[in-house]
Image 1 (tube, one colour):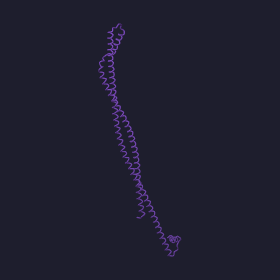
Image 2 (cartoon, helix red, strand yellow):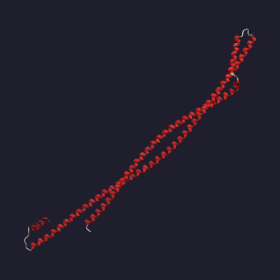
Image 3 (cartoon, rainbow, N blue to C red):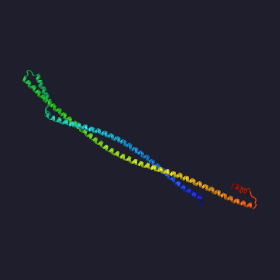
Image 4 (cartoon, helix red, strand yellow):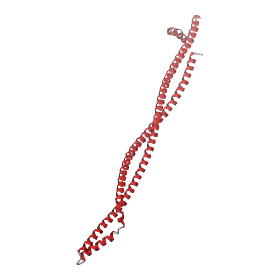
Length: 290
């Protein structure tokens, strides 16, 4: 097998290797594009989760502020409730002393006082003793009226206090329910926050892995591109050598033909035969060339 054939075989092998390298690089470029898409998607997802986390933290701050306000409101309601209950106890003790006076008919007592006062003013020749008796009776009735009115006032105050205490208890119960609802909501928000943090952590880890893979693929593409350049250079060099060998072969074959023809002309000269112009050129032209 000639050297030229060997070279062309090497060229064929090199071209197959070049084709394989080009296909591998194209496949890696597609992989790189896919990895870059994954990276872009992961960055968007991380940004989205971070925005959700920021919003959730703001919501938690608002809930905590609202919870603190509810705690303060609960303390104030409890204070008012304690004060109300304390006042109710005091009024109940006081009311016990006046409670029997509730049986007194206030309007009847007032009419009786009016009657007695009218009698004093309109009765002529009222004796001093009788007048004193009537005045004493009026004083007694006024004292009785005052006691009855105080009893009614205390009774009304007790009813008002009980109503106020009931309203305070209702408000307190409502605030306590709101506090529990806030605590539950805060608990859910904290769980969601931890979930988001874990998701972000996992996404960041995945992103770092994708970036590492991207750099690995880029490095491999760079290596293959260098191999492609080297393979192209090798093919060009082999083709150059093959061309040189073909030219050398052509020159050798031409020289061989000329040498054969020259020997034939020299034989004619020896035989004294006449030479043609072509033969003369061949004989002397070749000599000059030589």
